[in-house]
Amino acid sequence: DLKPSNIVVKSDCTLKILDFGLARTAATGLLMTPYVVTRYYRAPEVILGMGYQANVDVWSVGCIMAEMVRGSVLFPGTDRILELNLHPNPQNFVSSFV
Image (cartoon, rainbow, N blue to C red; front, side, top):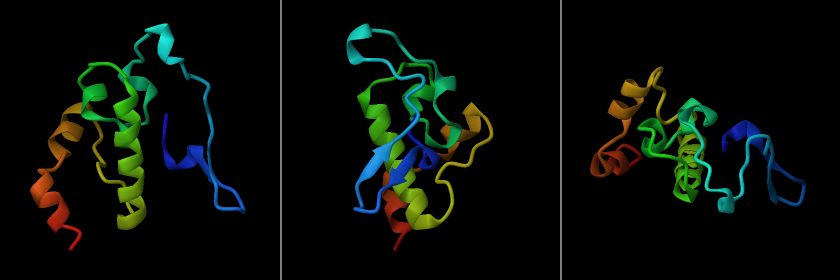
């Protein structure tokens, strides 16, 4: 569950990821449910119930980085449908930062 509150920056500027309470090894073959991932950082695949793979973490990191730039969460939806509708068109998304 990658989210800002689970990331710590040490004094030497290295990052540490915390809270592995629900972590699974890749070899187990178990799928995580959409409810394990914090709402604002869930990838579309998780929202749609397609399972949790490594690319979902990449999505979460992107959401965290965008939040750092914007100063607010990228996808502030309150439910699954609203979150899916908030995912931007990539062409329009980049121009919103310029």
